[in-house]
Image (cartoon, rainbow, N blue to C red; front, side, top):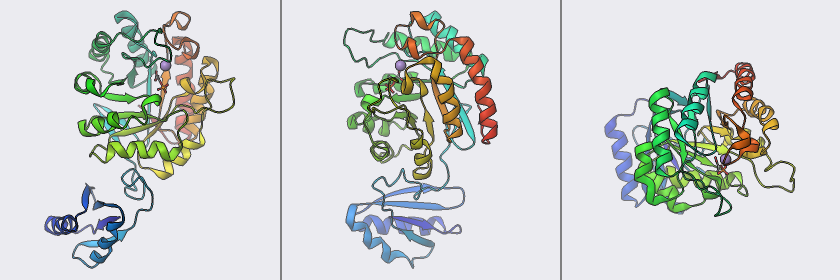
Length: 338
Ligand code: PEP
Ligand code: MN
């Protein structure tokens, strides 16, 4: 249930409505917009009682939210959420290009890549320091050392960094280094991790699990938003299907669906979706045309020698060329790159 306060509602009227809802034993979650305040009401079946408040001073209307994801639903918050990370805006009419290697491998590698991302017109640097690998014997990332190199790359280029957190016990460490915390596909339903990130209030990039439905992704976002953190970027990164030619199957219809179901920005990771670098550029263009608010692209100075995900990584030349076409598609659909 949401209570929409009229544009002229006073602070006193808003507080009165919230107090009354709490007296009913329900939880309130106000969103103070520029025009209007809307108050989310949580408490399962009991929320019906709020309908009796329709005539209260300052109340414009009361809308039942039927979706199981209450705060993530566009019904609750019709305008696009725009997430501000330093100078970078994510959502609305912005197209945010996030690029970098799968894993931070050395200081020199990440500094090189950061310079390339900046030169090509990208606005966020990606790179994993703690890698969730299928095999325990594969390279697991440089750990805190990797985070330090990322911070150095940010210092030099001014690019904010997105990096994956796999362990809720490292929350504080990540809040010190990461501008955006990535939740990997494998951890989309790690509810302890989601709740901790929710409490931290830190911007988060939440990837769709390979076998998760669109609704599962939105409910995972709800775990974060319910703690008061609505700085969530959703990421489509391909799902498991019977097809084995590509690493996963890029579900572009999910982008258009998510844009109508939720106010949160939606980005696409074409690299993990297809797993083959030659197919990545086409999927970048298609994702932008489908309405994505950004792209998360793996690039590497020398993909053949990458310690992780080389076959899907673009080299600098291909990334630069891809960016040129991305800009054309972005302008055709009314998005600004950056
Ligand atoms: C990654 O971004 O490097 C990664 C591991 O992605 P995913 O969680 O989508 O597999
Ligand atoms: Mn990767």
